[in-house]
Length: 67
Ligand SMILES: [Cu+2]
View 1: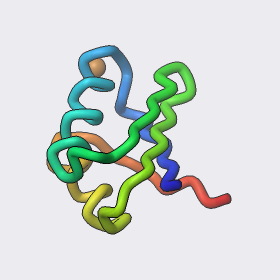
View 2: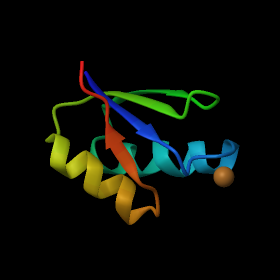
View 3: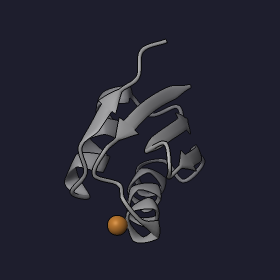
View 4: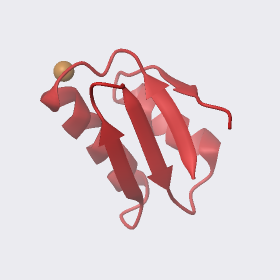
């Protein structure tokens, strides 16, 4: 499970854009977004680097949450 805080994800549109970006990378990814907490959890076989890159390309700034 990858976890990120995405401070610039501020509304439902952002949530959709982030979700779409990760889904485009891995159509089978399981994505959970907690918008009030600005938290994105991703279960994917894609590499963490590619997940971060996908969100950045969509215009957002993810920071990894370390366990
Ligand atoms: Cu937004």
